[in-house]
Length: 199
Image (cartoon, rainbow, N blue to C red; front, side, top):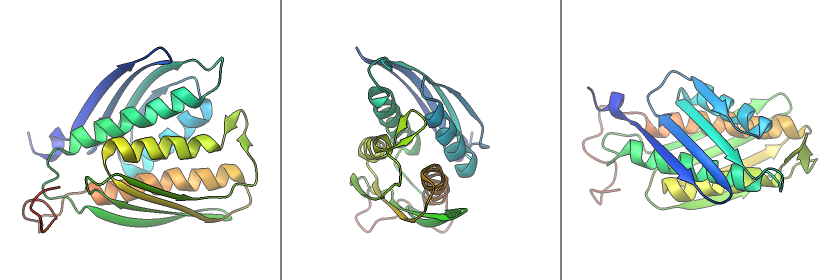
């Protein structure tokens, strides 16, 4: 098996609030199997996997009788954990990426450093606080937990837009494309892409 073919991981996380199993493959084909109680998140994760060429399987049950917060947050945690594990010592990766993605009138930018230095910056002002039953503040929670658990530096900027759905969709597409680029193998890179010799 090549190094790229082995870049995958899975996790099972069960708490009093959620029960999640998640499998993530960096070098996939954009396939997703998503079973969560949050339909809008399913849609966004499908876009993320498709545009990042990742394979992603999620089976999640949570206390949505309260709200979607715990489910969305914990899926972000699980995705971050599997990403970090799948990348291993990060040998040969490009490490950085900056991607702009439009969705009709909306424009989002995602900048990533696969750095082992967890940091998250988020600039977005949505016209609506809800997309259907989904609270837009949960986008922040998902992305922050992803960055924290994956130990990446993640900057997300929604430059403008009028339709909240379009704006969030642009974010998840840009996230997929940026993460695909940052984790791709560059044959010119010897070892890890850091003067420290370790990430």
